[in-house]
Length: 397
Image 1 (cartoon, rainbow, N blue to C red):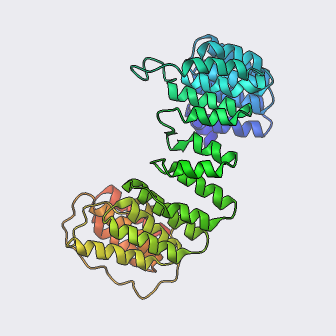
Image 2: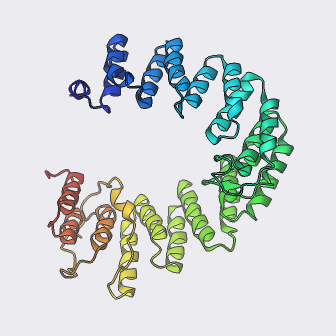
């Protein structure tokens, strides 16, 4: 089937078929599969062919087909081409090609990556140091994405590589935003070099909790579980931070055989933040994982009762997607209390979200009944959901 679809021009099948042919030693046939795409100069096809050639140790050919696209001016080709060169002992050449593009984000990152092998860390550091003085007036348009903070991070990477740890730390502290895209370079640097005291002090002031999380990971790796727990309990004033730290604390407790304590911690947080779906999601998962799905359902039912039966939030949608726990069916397989035929948008989602807990509680027939009643089986999505529920139970859809 894959061969047929590849022959009919289905691109997503073509690389898979080419890889299979290559594994069978039919490299010429593999390249023939990709040839119709390569002749157009399509970059995605060029990358697929180059990766195959490199894997077959036909490096010169891989370099050649990417060089052609680079010289034609394809915007993504230079980074791929130079990284390919660097992987095969031509780092100097790669660095020289990248040097004029220090102001472009992806190419600056590539330059830093190849600089060490090229023996040109000092030159790369000088280029980046000049960029750290730049103050964006219209980011990202004024600097094509390489803003001052990013330049500082890249320069700190080079300093760390050179063993200039104190300089790297001091440099990172000058950034306007130290935590970027869920990562904190300063926290990682301090942890890598065992600067526990500095990391602890930083965690006390870092508002988003990334430094605290990294400190916990470091302490846990060292076997200091109680110390890690203490970090989570010392939360800051930010409501978001408190919630995040509590969830992480519960997961830490569960990892170390303290599941009941973890559930108690999450229940307190869920009571304090009623209807906060991500907190309820975490509590739901934890109850199922610890073999206490009834506790999760009880909390949901109590919350629904407190709202007079109205549930205006989408509860733990991810819980319905979890792999079902195949437990023995209990006596609690009777029909669920009906809430009438009035279904607002989101009601089906909320009831479907309970499926994981119903199955974990030994109520598989309730699980199917819940989906059928929530959707009425009047739409395509409802039929699909009910089918999935039956498949989960091992019954014919």
